[in-house]
Amino acid sequence: MATVGVTHHQMFIDGQDVDSDQVFEIRHPATNELVCTMAKGTVDHADQAVESARRAFESGVWSSKPTEERAAIMRAIGDRIAVDLDDFIEAEISCNGATIRQAIGFHCGLASGHFLYFAEQAERYEFERDVPTVAYPTMSMNRVRREPIGVCAAIVPWNFPLVLGIWKIGPALAAGNSVVVKVDEKTPLSLLKLAQIAHECGVPPGVLNLVSGEGKEVGARLASHPDVDKVAFTGSTAVGREIMRLASGTVKKVTLELGGKAPTIVLPDADLDIAPDGALFGCMLYSGQVCESSTRVLVHESIHDEFVQRMVARARTIKLGDPSDFDTDMGPVVSERQRDRIVDYMERAKADGATVALGGGTPEGPEFESGWWIEPTIFTDVTNDMQIAREEIFGPVMVVIKYSTVKEAIAIANDTDYGLTAGVWGGDYEDAVEVGNQLRAGTVWINNWHQIDPALPFGGYKQSGTGRELGAGALDEYTEAKHMHVDLTTKLERHIFDILLSTPPEA
Ligand code: NAD
Image (cartoon, rainbow, N blue to C red; front, side, top):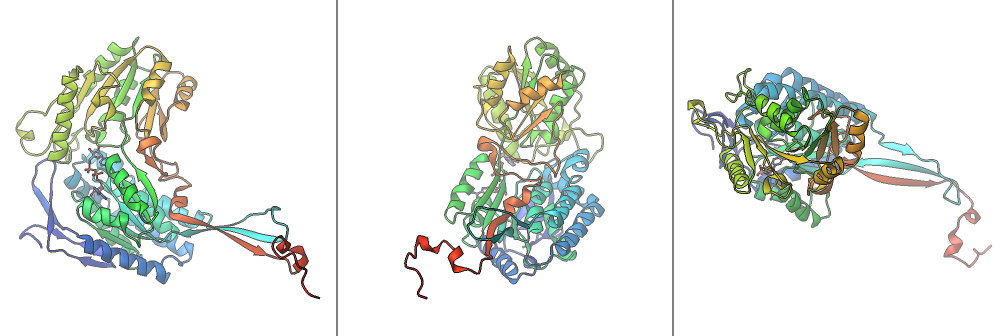
């Protein structure tokens, strides 16, 4: 039900706009102004979307389409994302508060290239492979086919909805599946636009559906739905655990990309002109609301004080403000709930004995009276057992931990429940790589951060998730492997049926 004078958006099911009698209000994180309303989906909408996805899948309208035709449609979608980039940027900034530079560089700027990567995979992926084998007693032909799984649910968070959505929608469509996307209630617009573009470019009705709704109702329904074959989720580890539990009822395939508490080891020979800036970039991008951020910075005692002093000086220059202003370095955090959660963590850090080297609260000034703001914050004198060193804060909050030996730094780095990303800053890259080899994380960056490429796998060790998104293996997560054995012998005696049938056949 729309609010007068405010744009209203509907869900997208079976190629149609679908409304609801309830709405979500989408508010700008920097001002708390009402941006638009979005139909609030229910369990019935989730069921309707799954039914439509199943129908489309069984009809073969997409799943049996020649791969080059699927690829052509996907290429058209990837190109349209680039053409409509400004609309995506506006949608992302107004819903999740990304700054315009971050939206161009990451939130939306990566989207077209990542989608086009999956368009290419639709054509290049080895859907069928003949395997020579001598393992069988009779002559045979053995083929491995990769077939689409069926109906895939994609449950997406608010921080990078477009790109994280594409990481699921792209490989799912490339492999021939049907998809139901569940957007986060705060950030539906960019993926809604993608679904509409996909429809216009020729993705048949029912193949790509989008629903909104409360996670614990609509998301949970998709994760447990008997007719959903796979669920892909990005978000908190707590919800990831719940999704795994819900999916277990029907033994769905699951990929989970969850939280992180990434360590960066700054080696004694790190370049002090680069590494402090790099550590800030690693931690503070998009107000620290990135699962792979470098939130624990481990600094060798010999350079600790100078490193911290340089980093604090640089962090003081970070300009907070209107995310659509090109001069702004850092925008708001996404919601009041998220702001309060971060403030709470900072208060506990102070109580635990950490020293505030910078920030530690909410900024003051008329421009910060509306919306949700946190100062760039650096804590020193942190030990790895403190709560701020163990839990995902999801804000612009860095903890600095001093270490004495590299062995100790590696032990601290790995002493975490998470394992999404890790990094090393060092002058000798062979030494840095040796340290990187010992870090238990799905991605290790040496002398940089946030370097994500669609051709390279992304995902977590330990409680940071299961499975990998992106990379040449991404479609493996959206296909079932089928071994087809075709026996070529025409002679009964060449078979080994006598293992069971010992009585010779009658002449
Ligand atoms: P969340 O994990 O609760 O939500 C992510 C998505 O899951 C949303 O679409 C939500 O509607 C849905 N969801 C929630 N409960 C569900 C359930 N029971 N079943 C199925 N789907 C469900 O994340 P949040 O509440 O937005 O943020 C809380 C914390 O999660 C953050 O502070 C941060 O630490 C973490 N987080 C991590 C990522 C990431 O990229 N790894 C992204 C967002 C949030």
